[in-house]
Image 1 (cartoon, rainbow, N blue to C red):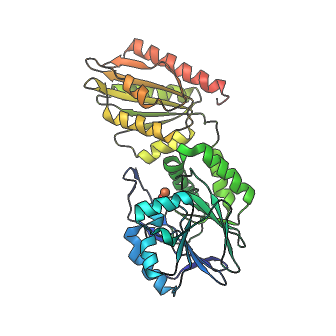
Image 2 (cartoon, helix red, strand yellow):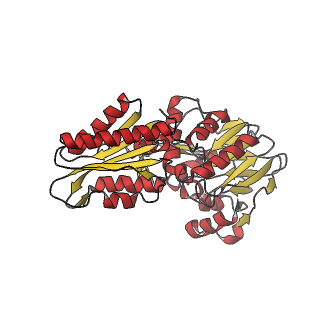
Image 3 (cartoon, rainbow, N blue to C red):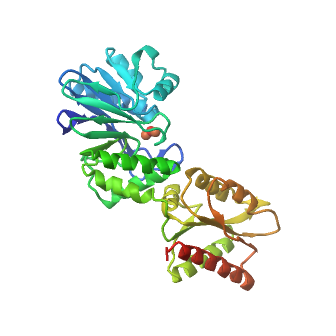
Length: 394
Ligand code: FEO
């Protein structure tokens, strides 16, 4: 495959992985993903920024041959995770003259995880520059979006910013440039929700920093290149905002429809009051959709049946996931149904203990919800509505 030129001797040498259906063995991929790698030919030196996921290494190395790349001076590791740095050892075999350039934390990671020899690594600090002749690479440390070792590389003269995983999308493409369409927005939001949302405040900080830098293009490590950086930066500004939207997320698992009946009732009544809802069937739903709902939701209502004497394990899984994704939700509550007894909400409350949410009185029902239970649900619904109103969301 012939490398596509992005601008002035900066080339895309990454690969699509259309067949990949799940990432981190957790979140389904709707459109596969890409592993982006960039080749920068300066007048004196050649650099590769990020490498390749190891199962794709053979194709990647063949492409370098096909494109006549016989010499590489620097391999820039923006982050140590294997989907980007995993092919560094093979590149060092192919180009023994090359030095790996990275920050101190990433150095430790690639030595431990990829067994890169210490003498092959050059360490850079924040704002250090590396000359390739007529091009300069400047390194911007960005710990926390998403690993402590993450850094960006600025190709200074061309004003191209390689942002590592930050601002990326699991989305394959033919044209390397982002079409600014809803499909890419959807993939980028899913990606933000799953990977970046736990670091929302840092995402906000680096979004602002990049806005001030005004790069001509943003070159992420997954998904298409943003020729119009405002497209993705404006989205990140929205997703990282402190205020949630007028949205209640209602994930539920229901064994005999009683919990589902309560969730549907809450959703319907809230809609009638002008509050948007997203009902999510935990058993059949896609966790990526749930994560996307968590980006915007101001309130979470988790519904669960009782299994033996505790919550349904699928509800526990969702509570745990929500807890580690650290959404911006301000309010949370539970509804559920039991057959003979137990503690339905205790463990779920514990699982959400990492969230900074105000609890709303939950509703627990024996068997099917009855008139008095719907009255309790009406109180819960009013409470959610009033809290959204107090935030001027409705
Ligand atoms: Fe953190 Fe795409 O790897």
